[in-house]
Image 1 (cartoon, rainbow, N blue to C red):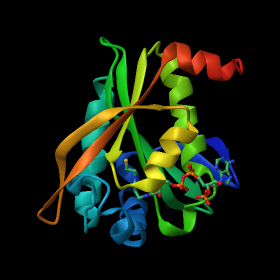
Image 2 (image 1 turned 180 degrees about the vertical axis):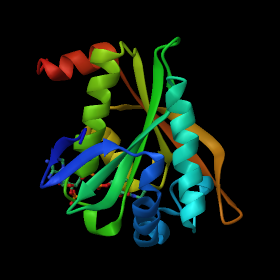
Image 3 (image 1 turned 90 degrees about the vertical axis):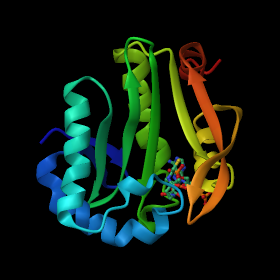
Length: 185
Ligand SMILES: CC(C)(COP(=O)(O)OP(=O)(O)OC[C@H]1O[C@@H](n2cnc3c(N)ncnc32)[C@H](O)[C@@H]1OP(=O)(O)O)[C@@H](O)C(=O)NCCC(=O)NCCS
C-alpha cells in the first residue's frame, strides 16, 4: 500500500515483521551471493530467524533508529536497502543494501539508496550519510562512487569472513555535497 516506484517495474516499501515468509524466500535466493559482504546475523536460514531480523529493525524504527525496506518485483522481494544506523541527534546515518543475483546490474541499488539519501538529507536534516563495505567489494564501491560518495579511509582488519580478516572502507556524502549534486553544481 505504501510503496514508491524505483523504476524497471520494481517498487520499494518498508519491510515489516509480517513479510517474514517473503523475506525468508528471498534469502534462499540471495544467501550465497550476499554472505561474504553483509553482516552474518543478516544471513538467516529459517523463517523464524528472518522474522527476528525484521523484528529487530521494527524495534529500532520505533526508536527512530535503523530502518529496512524491501525491493519488490512481480510480488517477490529481490533485494533491499536499510539505514544500518540512524542517529538524528548527531545527524549521521549509514545506508546499506543487497540484491539477489537476478536483480544486479539494473541500477536498483543506486536508485534506492538515492531515495533514502533524499529522505535523510531533505526530510530528516541529516548532515552525513555513510556507506561501509569491504575494500574488495567492487560492486558496492562502484555504487558508492556512482552516488557521489567520497572515500574517507580504510578500517584495517575490521571485517571477518570465514576466519579471515578483511579491510573495510568508509564512504560518505555530506549535506552540502548532496545539495550541489541536486543543483548540478
Ligand atoms: C552491492 C550491490 C547491491 C550492487 O548492485 P548493482 O546492481 O551493481 O548496483 P547499482 O544499482 O548501482 O547498479 C549498477 C549497474 O546497473 C547499471 N544500471 C542500469 N540502469 C541504471 C540506472 N538507472 N542507474 C544506475 N545504474 C544503472 C549500471 O550500468 C551498472 O551496471 P554495470 O555493473 O554493468 O556497470 C550488489 O552487487 C550486491 O547485492 N552485492 C552483494 C551484497 C553487498 O555487497 N551489499 C553491499 C554491502 S556494503
